[in-house]
Image 1 (cartoon, rainbow, N blue to C red):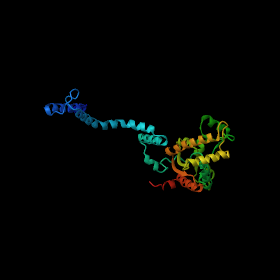
Image 2: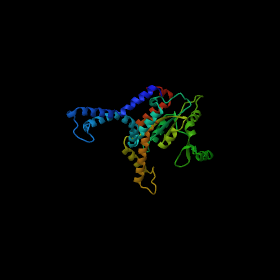
Image 3: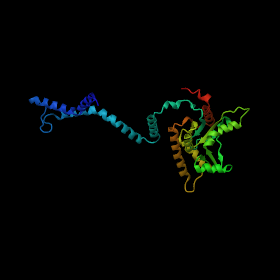
Image 4: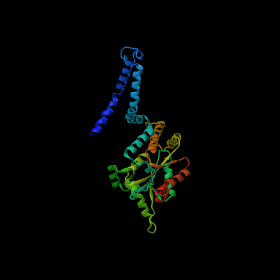
Length: 320
């Protein structure tokens, strides 16, 4: 380095011997004071008093404390984050990761339609079990012809393709019966295919696929780089309401009870899963809209309003 840099470093290092210099000065002053010297105890404090020594040390530590705090802050912050439970900790870590990656958080408020017109818009409706999201999706599809469900692959009608996709692990989801599978193609191409088949006088009306997804399927859909998701989260405002609806489903037989379990154990397991699903819905950043499904007609109205943002005309009206 330069001579100026070396001089600055040497001067900076003097701060470590400053307390000793202060104590030497105080000791000399005490000795020159003669009978007026405040020192009365022989031994370690024969030249300065304990009070004078303590004052010098406190002054030094007061000077150093801000530096210690600035160095320890990153470590303390990480440890504190680890101690925060559940969704709060996940939210803090996600925010920190976004900051480290330089993510522009304000972009979350932007229009869902960017410069890349090759993306396929998909309406993703998700939420925990027992929220009634399937009922809402069915109402939307039945009442608004612009929205269609993805075309599923049938094992019985196209067994060869079904087996190939299944062996390669390319299905996004296979239903409980094992007969129908949802593929990437079914999500990305169904809307265009259905629109072309319903072509009227050479004019194809634009359609959008709406996917009724549990949280597991929602996580897989997020990884579709060719899709532009408009996310709608369906929930309830009270965990007791989730439990009540789950009890009703169990009582109706819609939720089977395994031989080695009881109704109570199944209910507890499903409630735990609901809590995990809610955590994902809160911190994932996937869902622009949230609907608390207390009144079915009002919830359908809200879903239609959210779904309208799948079309550029509606997106352009979003306030900045």
